[in-house]
Figure (cartoon, rainbow, N blue to C red):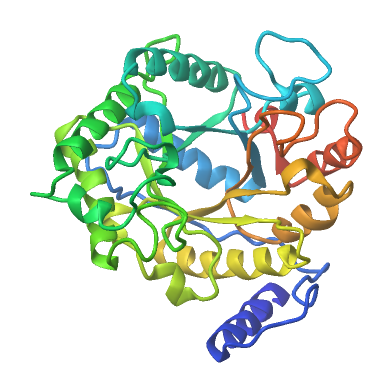
Length: 375
């Protein structure tokens, strides 16, 4: 009952445009009551059985707890001070594999496509066979100049030129063919398709990427997303993908749904909320997760905190005092923190880091699920 009262308070605050002081929204007595989701219709009308089974599995896991994972925990990482062929800070510190393993298609537009597919496929298979569920984002190169992330060169009007009859349409179709080649190559040791939670054109409500606000119209974004789903599933034979829609943090329900391409193109909802050390993370995460949960419940969809984290984990008790408080009473399916690259850019502690014990305390919470908890 208390959780439903909190929902009403949140809704009133959002509708009135009110703000709250930091910490006011956290209720230590709130209970986690995930909505019962029973989805049977998907964006891909020919979704394969492995992907359907994954969605059913996620529905069941959501009732059990919150699957926790990291971006690129296989094949990247500080691996400090342990020397290992594949850097796996998460596994080394946690003593388990993440329930969710994230990967990115950023480099799929480069010329050496076969090498990229081989490398990513190898990491995905390893993650899958160690019990992790696979999710993929796509920091797509800018077809205007092939720059990584789309952060360089001219970003304005790129999306419009990727649509039908546009200057970059052929380049866009080539990129999708590369993506399809990778997805269709994902097979486990028994030759079965490995399903993927795919998050294309994410954080579209910001100006980080050429598909973001200010560089295209709302309708152009929606068409880009719809084209991606239709071409992959109808033209390129990709049937192992569950499609996700995931803005960056929002201030309202209206902002979240502004670029939404329609229920027939989306299977699962997400939101990205990072801790920028400004004291607002807990409230921002609580607000955003409540917005998304309300929408997901109405649409009969699962939802997730698709990206989060505190760069370099500069607060030693961040895991229990910030992240856990933000998600503990939410009905979300999973939470994913960003990747570890070097000792100066990481989101999961390595051995000897001051937050290592607090991280383990967070992982030991009953509701936090790792690979061994979801088998």
